[in-house]
Length: 168
Figure 1: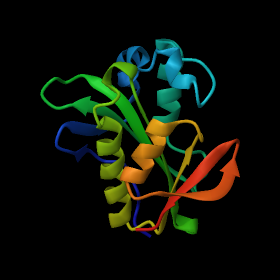
Figure 2 (figure 1 turned 180 degrees about the horizontal axis):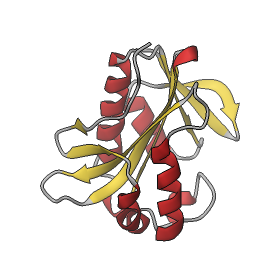
Figure 3 (figure 1 turned 30 degrees about the vertical axis):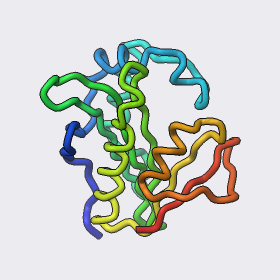
Figure 4 (figure 1 turned 45 degrees about the vertical axis):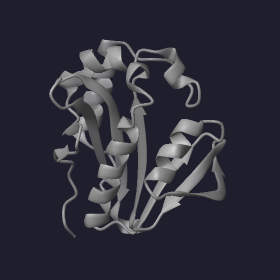
């Protein structure tokens, strides 16, 4: 089986850069608004905690059957980081689970959709047979991103979230 690894992905307005610990300080500011945790719970991480988290994520999943692909979103031309997108790929089950977050000041401009579409297309090329996303039922913006990427809601619920599914 081909090795899955997150590489750079370019879109019209964004560069998706593989996650590195060095992005933690800037991303702590991007993700620092408590409103971002309204649907997912928890609280924003400070730069030190995010540095530790990013180092763990960049090192890869401890389960050899799972591949973590994580990117930061950088605005072309400005060089500013605005969010993240991730895919947890499980080749043995031919699935990947996507998640995205865009900092509050950059929301409503289509960046999450643009990044999620790019990763969805990248996963379809691997190929991955089934893509999943879990969206809180009241998180209408995130549901719109999933729908724009071709995902459809299913009756399945996990931790109170709706499972969305896409089969390339």
